[in-house]
Image (cartoon, rainbow, N blue to C red):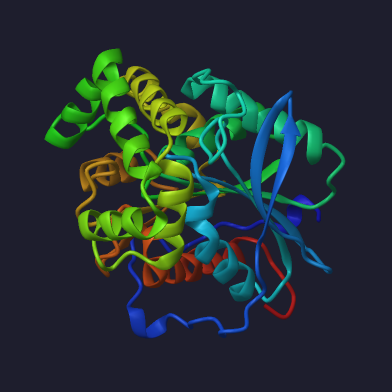
Length: 329
């Protein structure tokens, strides 16, 4: 699809009421989970391949980078785009159910390079527009991919973006201390592994009790199967430590200005990872970016509830339809 199909999204700084959201049909197309070897690293993918694709969407998760959390979102997005997009969600290295990398830990920069390698390996000959969608730190990763592969990426959407440290957040300060201590990180990871080793019925009850009854079955399953593993939690915390070091720097405002017509960001009302102070700073420094605020209370962990996943999928599909002219959508 030629670049002329891209146009500026004029809808900025808005929120969508729930009564505008169209929930997908019960019998929706299911995403397929499979393993792929990327630069010698076994990587989990969650995919839906379109028979008549007009674009390729690559979704980058937050941290933890477990794609199973995003199954409801991926399937709802595919339905909202009426099957005209092939969608791939790519997991982070060594953040899955099996310790295939023998407890090796991977930094933020290594995870970024891993995603670039995937595009160069699997999408090098792709003739379709590539749309990047990132959640939380996945938004930062998408921006870095965009900078490296500007000729391939046509559009980027950041969901509840974690782009810079929030020095006012006590939660971030606590996570930073935990992630920065090898001893504490090992203890937390051991406890997670202990819970994960319990009978499935017991671990599910514990997860639902402590993480909330609103969590979807998809999120509970992803937590019990993938997150409650020693190697996964160690990698989650190690990656977080490297995130905090890198994101102490300012975002690359100059790049965002140059690509402002190809960037959209969705913020939450009460999100310490992507606070409204960052929303205001982006709107001041890069006024051409399409900015939105979600006011339905789905929180930063939108992927953990079916309602949140569906709402965000609807929002993303609208942005894509407005940005890329697709006949009959």
